[in-house]
Length: 161
Ligand SMILES: C[S@@+](CC[C@H](N)C(=O)[O-])C[C@H]1O[C@@H](n2cnc3c(N)ncnc32)[C@H](O)[C@@H]1O
Image (tube, rainbow, N blue to C red; front, side, top):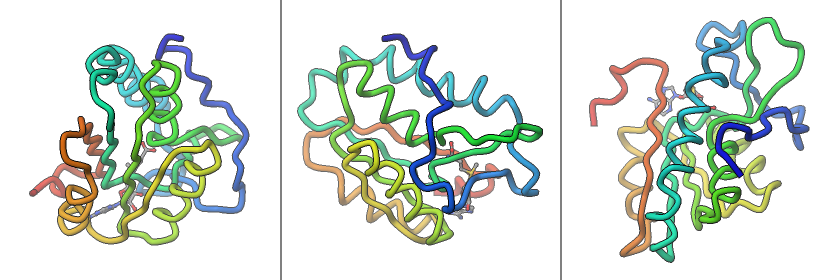
C-alpha cells in the first residue's frame, strides 16, 4: 500500500489523553498532515526495500508529542507522526521493531507510547529534553539495527545536539 494514502482519520483509542495543538494551542497547521506527515510516510515507503534487509528497524522520535494531532479549524483529531510512521512501516512490509518516543512533557510521552501500543507497536517512551534523552534512545537501539530519526521540535534551536 502506498504511503500517500495512510488513513489519518482513525479513531483515537485514548480520547482523554493529550493532543498536539501546536505551541499556541489553537491547532497545528494543515501543512502538518498534508506535507510533514505525508513526506514522512513517503520516505518510509521509499526506503522499504533497504529496511527489509535489516532484522531490527528502529524509529527514534525525541520530540514525539502525544501521538495525536488536531488541525486548526477541525473538530476531530488525527494520528500523530510516530503513529503514522509505524502504520506506514507496516503497510510497506517492514514494520519498525522498536519505536522510541520522547518528550519534555511526561504525559505526552506516555500518551504516545499508549497510542502506539494500541496498534501493537513495540513502543518505549523517554521523558526529558531531547538533548538528554537522545543518549538513552541511542543506547536502546540494538547493535546492527537500521535506525530512522524523526526530529520534529517546535523550534530549530532545540536541535543543538
Ligand atoms: C511539533 S511537536 C511534536 C509533533 C509530533 N512529532 C508529530 O509529528 O505528531 C513538538 C513536541 O516537542 C516537545 N518538546 C518541546 N521542547 C522539547 C525538548 N527540549 N525536548 C523534547 N521535547 C520537547 C513538545 O512538548 C511537543 O510535544
